[in-house]
Image (cartoon, rainbow, N blue to C red):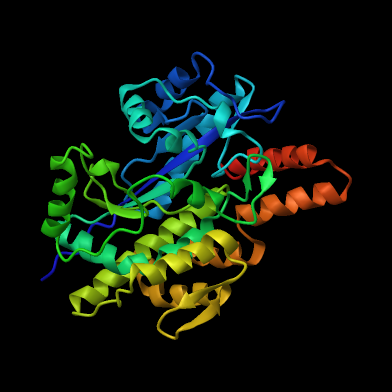
Length: 377
């Protein structure tokens, strides 16, 4: 009998830290702030590449409910510490008006090496994301499910969009973060690999050539984690609303469960070319949930609300088994009210219509982000 994966869950989130009064992104964290966070959260909090960022990571969780409790605790603790310094975290993949050129990277060996290796490209990474790890112990199963679940990466990106602004401008994209991150090498869609061994051989070519130190330098939208026995979803913007984060995590783990259930019966989800999936990624980053994605089986565009209903029906049995059906169904709430990107644009345009200037309207967006980041935690 084929052993069922653990399907444990871990969620990582990156926050931008803003000055509550000015609404500007800080250039550096005040002395003592990081130490105060570490005293409360220990190894679950860490600095990020830029000094204006903080990263948190949940424990290995056995369920979405456990992940919710831990993620709430982490967000609340970071917010409480920041507030003592007149600052606040925002869970958004870009700051509405910050200039990347003014930011400085954290002075640590790992980040100094990255800055030297990637030059000006990495200096522009004034972006935040969220990563969802799902525990899949068998390496070959991990690679096989990566090939199949890749089809759904654009659908989950669309649900998460939170970066419609860049450097004070409305970009016309719901996930501008995706465009910024794609300038970095070894990002985007992973190749298709038949086995774990084949994947490892490809990694070894780059390692043996001295191009990368290890597989942590593969920053694909979806990858086998180099540190944990997990399949790591990395394509998403960070969700401002914590329930949106949990909904996407529930959808992801349910999709993997569905694909494994089919795999046991010698059934597979069709693997489509990266060219086709990349087209849906573009539509997701451009339009979020407000337009359509391509249904490759039908060969036509299908509205996002219908696609979400189809995914829910496809994985409902698995969500029930994993006790995350309510979180999965929350995806319909996101579709109805919009993503963070939609809300940010709504706040911005309402402020302009009320007579605010562009900068003041962007400040209103920051105020909304500050409040929404800790709503419900």
